[in-house]
Length: 110
Image (tube, rainbow, N blue to C red):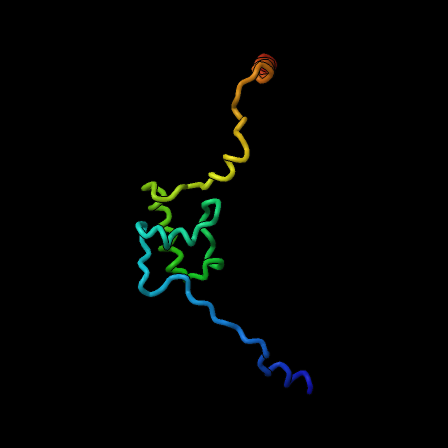
């Protein structure tokens, strides 16, 4: 079989068409937390349109709904629950050594 005929043959691999993530009956709204939370990453970021497999209009509506839910405190801006438990926060603590270095920096600038 020559190359020109091989291009037009269908591949033998069958693919399953994925269902759309938003059904026709689902309402995109800031109150629908179950629907909105599917489009947020573990860190609380809004997932991209390619990852979500949404249309442009759906992605815009989802983005607006997520932002409204965040402002109304239905959703957190960041999801730091796992990170804060594992690593204690040590920045901003004042120790004698830090105070000395800060004092030295202030006197050097003058």
